Length: 191
Image 1 (cartoon, rainbow, N blue to C red):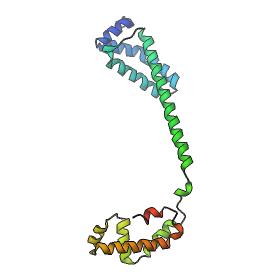
Image 2 (tube, rainbow, N blue to C red):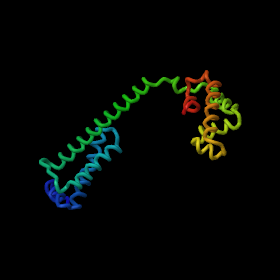
Image 3 (cartoon, rainbow, N blue to C red):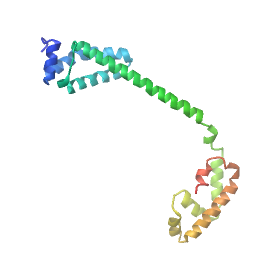
Image 4 (tube, rainbow, N blue to C red):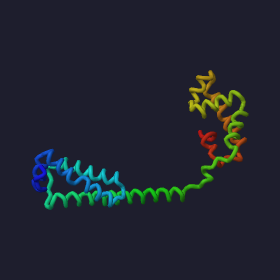
C-alpha cells in the first residue's frame, strides 16, 4: 500500500478501504500531533484533536471533497481545530473571570458570617423552651414534619401544635433579638 500516492489513498478511503485509512493514519498521525502540540502547548489536547480529525475523516470518507493535497488538507484541518479550541478556551476563561468578578462585587462577607457563639446561643435558647414546646419545635424544624404529622405523633390536636410553635417562635425571637440580622431567620423565623 505504501506505493500509493495521496490521491490513490483518498480514492481508496472513499471506498471504505481500511488499509488506505491505516496508511494515512500511520503516515500523518505523529506529525499532526507534533504540529497541534506546538499550537496548544498541551500534548494530550493535541492528540485528542488529531484523533477527532481521524474519526471525522473516517466517518465522512464517502463525502470527502479535498481539492488540494491530502497532507495540506490534514494540516489545515488540525490548525483550524486548534484555533477553534483556543478561541473556545478564551471565551470560557473570559466568562469564568466575569462570573468571578461579579460574584466578588456582590458578596458581602458579613451576610455569610455567623457570629461567634451564635450557634451555641441558638441551641441554648431552644433547650430553654418548655419540654413539650421544645419537642414540637424540633419535630417541625429539625425533622421537617408538618403540623398534622406532629399532632399525630404526639397525640395532640393540630391547634395545640400551632399554638406551641407560635409560642416557641415568639420566645426564641425574643431571646435572640440581638442576632436577628444573621442567618437564624432560616432556622427560627421561617414560617
